[in-house]
Image (cartoon, rainbow, N blue to C red; front, side):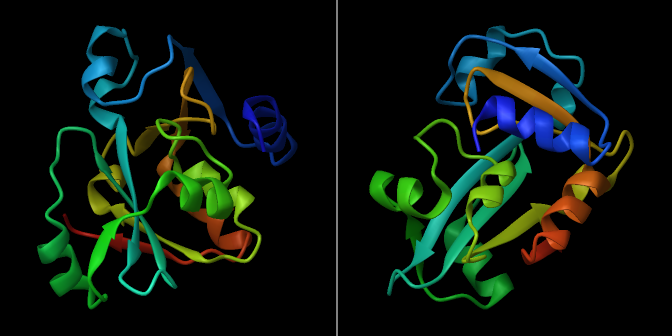
Length: 162
């Protein structure tokens, strides 16, 4: 799904969302110059795979957090994890680097990717800012709507403390 299709899909499900359009960004640092309505709710996303390249995880945390993959692995009982390469990102989620987002799971028809979502996104204002499969915009959704949407599509969503 591209950006336009994401917006249409959200509308068809009557999910309220807001959009902030911006220049293409590839890192959290590049977002520093953009004026956001909910800057504390920006998501940082890491697409990783295990050492056998059979299991994929999307780890989504608040933008100001760092993720220690060894600690994540220990806490969540996964195999050794490393960043998935560009071809895996495209093959599994249909996304280009810089556009990684939980909404990319809508492209994962086989539900190969497990989402690990930082529990802090459920704290007030309980909003999450993610790309709409395109790094030229940020979509603001209620976190519970995102979780419900992905679970209804058959995706595993794990709420975790990071």
